[in-house]
Length: 300
Figure 1 (cartoon, rainbow, N blue to C red):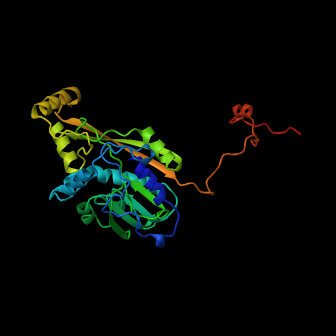
Figure 2: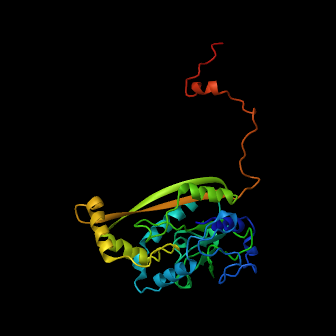
Figure 3: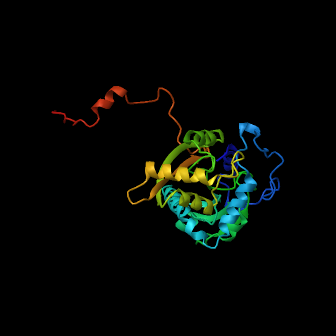
């Protein structure tokens, strides 16, 4: 998740009425704004253009168009369920929510209208949006790059977003994302009360070739500018043998661990709890040791 995405999350997230949603004329979903950083150059605010967005669009369109594409949805389905669980933990109803990088919509089917009243799906892939699954929540699909969201400020009450993070053999997968980096980006974007939750999802595969095949089928091949266009078969065979020797199970399978990062941030609001003023405490730290001790009745 780049700093550009975080800045746009702050613009999009808010508490405006659902009726206020409208595409912004300043930002077309099909064309990047004039300020889009070119390959390898820094954008405003110190962001670096790491990914080839057109390559990612082609990868996701190819993945969504596969006849057997459903067999590569298992990881996103699992993550979608876990994201929905975290939304249910928040005791409120969201009138309008935004799913960034929604793909075929893997979260909405786990939510109800009692939690999210209306939903907007955005993805860079028109094929993925066209194949989005139905849910009981009224949904609108918008073709847009998550780096350049075409929405007015303070449109949505809830935002979900997908981050580029995959495991495997660099540079044939996307660069790793550090938890601290995501936290700093959300903080710089103006979000407060940040919480971080990490899940490890382990999947068993027959071998490393199946891992790479599934990543490709998910549309999650590397799209970084510094990627190599060719990987020699000898290198892959050697890597597969080493991986199986080091991590293989007795039944011949090899594990692949996907690290899923969940982060929650809130837009500042006057109703949020604030720290008490210095010196306003009415309990001394020396009294903390008495907590849990039995009290004695007054003999009088």
